[in-house]
Image 1 (tube, rainbow, N blue to C red):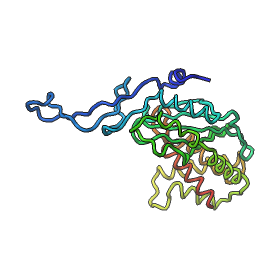
Image 2: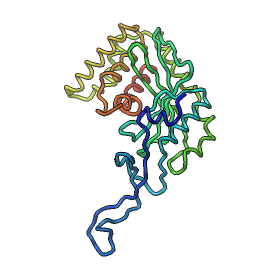
Image 3: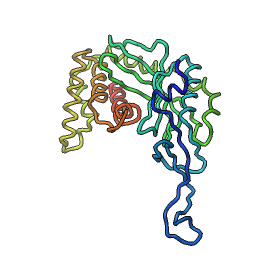
Image 4: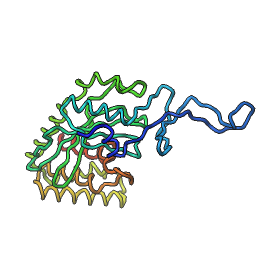
Length: 285
């Protein structure tokens, strides 16, 4: 098992954030610092690049990457998990840690998949520590993820994350993951007809708003093709349809044009939202 420093080095996370006071430039008057005036706000700055992630108030306390990884190591140990990857999203504004159990393979509708648990923590003041689950179909690498209802609900960046470690045993449970997999197993036994597919595509593309733009028409074409291909490959079931949607969001849907942009969108952005909308639609249909 890798130690904290090895994980930081291998995943480009070996840097710190610092809280620096913000000043604004105004008219140069006697007593002013070269025209700079103090404010009650601070910038959270990535130390190695001097990139400002966000602005915060005085009470905000940044959590360093090494502390996040150390905390995840403890969570992993408490829950029989292993850290397999860590990702700096959007230049490090968010840090995602991916973990797995010793046996993380499960078959859904004859498709072998891998299951992961992930933790996400923000340096940009948008995300307190949260956990979620991710599933990947091995054959085609289709991915989908969902946040767990369990989180450090009382944790904000006004106190050290280490102070919350004592709460770890009640943070993670796998009931939500098991329920989601049970729903997907049920999808694999439920047939899907053309009406369902058309209704789903219209819902995801929001085609009730006219006129339909060229961009939206292309989306409908691409999404429909992905669904048709995956239904042909897997089965004419809701599981095949859902794989078509995740094929589109994993491999075709636009995402931020930066390192790990597609993963970022699947975990926290538009791709993830589309997957969740599709799942809920299929479950209710």
